[in-house]
Image 1 (cartoon, helix red, strand yellow):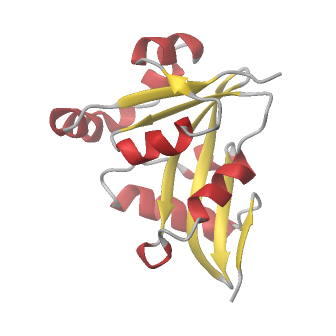
Image 2: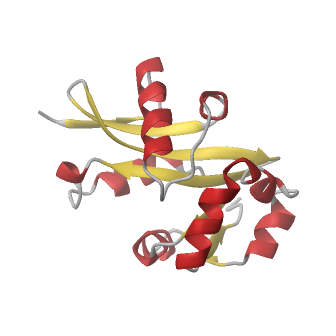
Length: 158
């Protein structure tokens, strides 16, 4: 069956995303409320949700891209690229923080992103990038004890 990518997740999609983000400890959990106010690109193979990418509004025209997930059976098929194309608009500032170099490389490659820092993220998001992580502080602390976060940004292209 053909894989379809859209920015119109169903209520069932949202429920599954919340559940999976909570279960996979290397991903930042998000509430249903946060997801409903976010833009989400989802990939489906027929009726099966096989992946997603979240653009969460932080403030003004600043968004954090994260919560990426692709079902292991569908990885390395270009789905992440399609989700990225569907989600990113030209008139917004996008922040990406990851412990995984391959995700950072994906966004640095011909998408207008550049290296950044936690301090710049905090400033551009009016502190929201930091404060939204307080709820998941234990999970974040665990990641930081084992990994080094990398920060990249894409400024408004208008």
